[in-house]
Image (cartoon, rainbow, N blue to C red; front, side):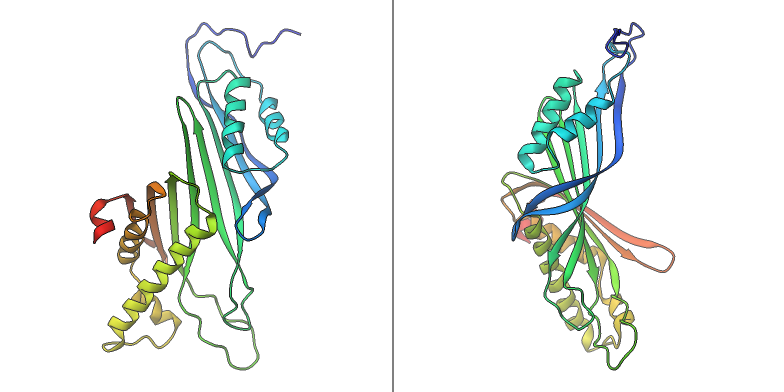
Amino acid sequence: MKDIQSQRDHRRINIQKVGVKDITYPVMVLDKAKKLQRTVANFNMFVNLPHRFKGTHMSRFIEILNQFHGEFDIKNLRLILEEMKTRLEAESAHLEIEFPYFVKQKISHANAIGIGEYQCKMQGLLEDKYELVLQISVPIAVPLPMQNGAGLPRSPGLWGNAVISIQYRNFIWIEDVIQMVEEVIGQNRSITEQQNSESSPPTDQFSAKSILSVEEITKALGRKFSGNKDISRFSVTVENLCEGFKTFAVLDGPQEQLSTG
C-alpha cells in the first residue's frame, strides 16, 4: 500500500503542531520516599510537520508511548522525544505530561486525610537542543480551626495556589520543590499574622484569609528560588481565590536583587 502521509507535498506549507492529545495513561514517576509512585497522567504529543510531507502517522505516537511502558523520569522523557523526532522525521518534538502527585503529610487534626495532592506537569521540547520545564501547583490554605463536637468536617479553607515552573541545572525532587513553597508560605503567614495581631487580629478562617498577599508571597518565593543554585530559570504565579474573581501576581527569575534582598 502506498504511504500517502510520507509523500512529498509541493505546496510548501509548514504545520507547527500535529499530533495526539488528551491521552490518559497509567505511569510511574520518581518518588523521593518510595522510589516510584503510580499515578495516571494526561499526555499531549506533537511534532512539527515540514512542508515536504503531506501528513504523519498518528498511530506512531501511541506506539512510542507503549514502547516505554509508562515509566517516566528525566532520562526517559528525552528518549521519548528523540524517538518521536526520528520516527516522525520531524525538526522538533514536544511532549506534555500532566498528573496528580501525592505526598504524605502530618495529620494536624482528626478530619485530615494525611495525603496532599499536587498537580504536576512536565513539558519537554527537543529541537536543536533539549528543554524541560517542571510545573507544580501547590495549594495555599489558611489554618483550619479545631472542630468541637460532632458534625460534618469543616471546609479546608483554600486561599489559592502557587504555580511554580522551573528549569534546573541539577535534578530536583518534586517533594523538595513543594517543601520550599510550603516553607515560604508558612513563614509569610507567620510574619503577616504577627504584623496584624495588634491592630486587627483575625478571629476565624475567613478573616484570616485577608492577611495573605499575592504580592508578598510571590516576592518571597522569588527570593527562595533565586537563591537555589540547582535552578537555572523559574516562573512563579500566585493566585488568590476571591468571590467572583481571582487576584494574582507573576514573577520570572532568577533576579539577582531578589536572591540578595
